[in-house]
Image (cartoon, rainbow, N blue to C red; front, top):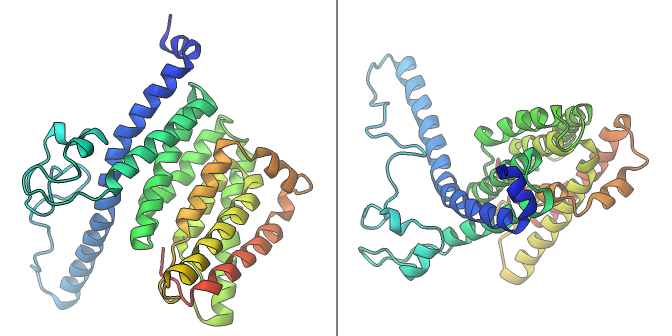
Length: 324
């Protein structure tokens, strides 16, 4: 009996195995969420120093970092006492509970967000396994899900959707759908085009009318990626869901938490959540009903209309937004 046949018969074991894998991936995603923005900032600073050295004719501005800093090095350590985290201290969720949320060396508190990200990744990975079963669609959906989690948390922290993740997602979506995993290739290509152009058009229209930036370029690329994965038919629902939830959350934060309207509110997390819901397939019927009378030629006006509603909702609770 092959592994695929074994898991086909024992679907519960497949879900359990994927949940455990998701917990491990969640631990790695915590590293990505923390380190990737720092890596990008370091890279931008290095480029600026190199440009400055060329303009001023200075040969050495100490441009190169003294120690490597990437997703692999240095090893994880406590930010307070620099205690190197040992293997048994890095078991998803279990180590946090065993250590009671504190560093084993200095007893400084460990953020609760680390186990939350691990638990979230494990749960949604299990849901993907339950929805798709063992096969290429499940593996591709897991990859997309993990990337969306990383993008969500990075955008929440920094109002940044890194090209290092969004652009490969566009190509991976087109590659996946060249095999028809989620939709056909023409619909995926139209989805990528419509996803980017619609929000890009609204961005420039809003900027020309108001002189302000209504959203970041990362939002365009993320929606293009979701269009490449799910096809153009899913875009109206994704925009509608994300703008609705974003408006509700943003207005609630202002009314109930007293959040300053001038503080930027990232939109990527809502796009990612809406995209994942559409991927899960639980709202496929809504997508069909919404787009049953829609053809590729009507994509731009339809999505632009929804995007204008999205932008109006966002500007209701924030006067300006940061680049993402």
